[in-house]
Image (cartoon, rainbow, N blue to C red; front, side, top):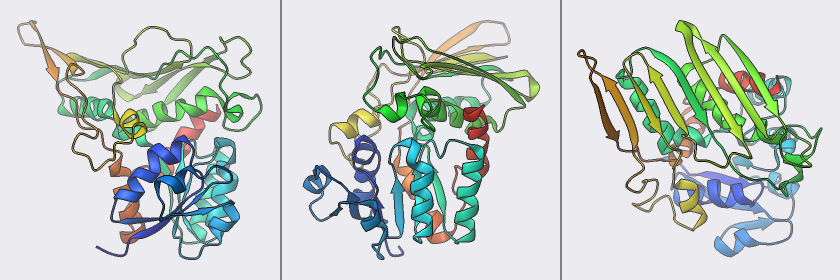
Length: 338
């Protein structure tokens, strides 16, 4: 193996603690060198060999660091990514990549001009439910697809404490940019850019300044309809994945365990990591030539966010194509910005 990629984290909030530090610290292809922590040094307590910087400027001035993970509030993604690129660093950027298509184009153009890699972190491509649904679709057992529904619902009636997500006029804020970035990326990963789309949003929580509900209808060739929905006042259990085709249907709840495991301190190197417990299987119903329905349970594919970091390593060290491409992110921002 080539030398590990020396890496710095711009923040150690929920994203840094759960989605980044555990992977960088346990993957021999990386070295977690530093974390920005302005006040509480929580990261330094868990990773005592990691340097704790008090500012982003200090982090970017560290010449040993090759890769910066930009996981600051979404309204700062454009500014902080541009700073990191101009400091001569490769960047792994949390979603949403920016607020507009124009900003995304400028970021990728800047990365190219400086011979640096800009990679966007879209971890939900590696959820167990998404991987399971993808496998069923690619098996062909559903026939020609008619409709695909992806949902990410919550019940959070209170206004959140993260003001950058809840304040009207703040760039890249609100539920559409937050969970919409995940759902749209899933559709793009499977089907590419839609021919057309229709977007609906609504505000239902008392005192909310930003949409807390959205629904996208994406139209694809061969009459394929893709529906993406999320709301913050959805009390019932809704399936995360529901696919209907001419030969059958597949339904799967959104029960990926990775975030909960990481939050409890389980490391991605643990054999139990990413494996859903029993009774969370997807349900596949197919119709035979005699029009008889057959229903079977489909075991969940192991979720594995480690694949993102493996891709980052090969992109930087071997100039491999990062799976979430510039085109994917530009298409995503077209839908988010609309």
